[in-house]
Image 1 (spheres, one colour):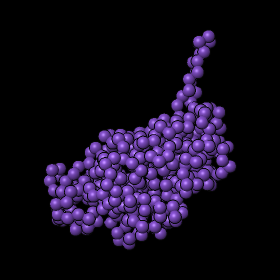
Image 2 (image 1 turned 45 degrees about the vertical axis):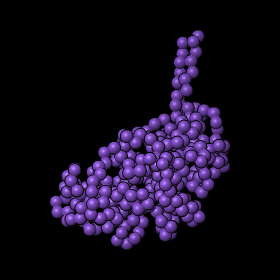
Image 3 (image 1 turned 90 degrees about the horizontal axis):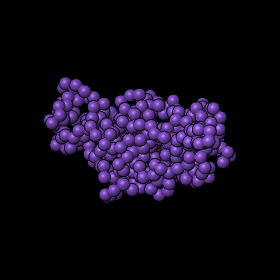
Image 4 (image 1 turned 30 degrees about the vertical axis):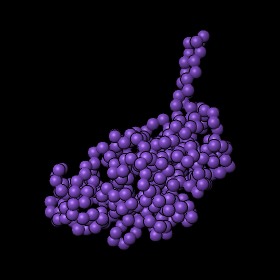
Length: 338
């Protein structure tokens, strides 16, 4: 059975493996021992902290196969993007010019450096083993974060964003980066993303042009990357789109990938998840598949379970399920149909 839980320091060696396997552009999962150690310790402190509002906390989750204690994926929630430093992105909007004398009005799409999205909660760091792509385990890894937000809403902002990794080729090159960012940093795309993972995107962002960049002036290959998703990032996009997230006018600073946005009240796993109590028993007639979690903080757990569930009644869970969720008879649980 696979269970989603908060990261622990003992996970460090396996997280290094996941970092090596992750897609270029997942900068929150750096392949660096000390940075990963800092990320883990920061997450442990965030789960232990007593807070009444969203701040700099980072909640790092791992997906563990309980059979062999092997990590199969990871994902994160940053409570407040841009809390300590601006969260930069590119705003993609039309710039309109007009001439009264000629009776001409013309709109041109332009990219502008901004930090409009600072203050929102950020989902990031999604990575899952290739063998589990497009399985219920992917849904668990992504959506159980949202169920955690539902249980602890006071820790998060009223709106949630996520950046989907943009297009890069098989050699790790990005036409968007080559046409824009590379002119300001003599670095290949993969190296720029690596530096963002090790340090911060701010030091690179602040050297980007602060004036609008007119999209038609970019090479066609770069224009085609604006809002384009890397094939390996499509599943992360699809899951959140089904949750109610929508694209907006913002794209990633380095690869042009799309940004998704949703308010808490419109996110399916938050607005439609139901709470109940666990009861120990055999699941005889499983009629549906659900994401199931406890509502704990530092002992948070979530699984995929086949259940015979009736709203308003206790939820029968097998001994194996109760153990995985770290719950007992009468414990509160949260669930939503898969």
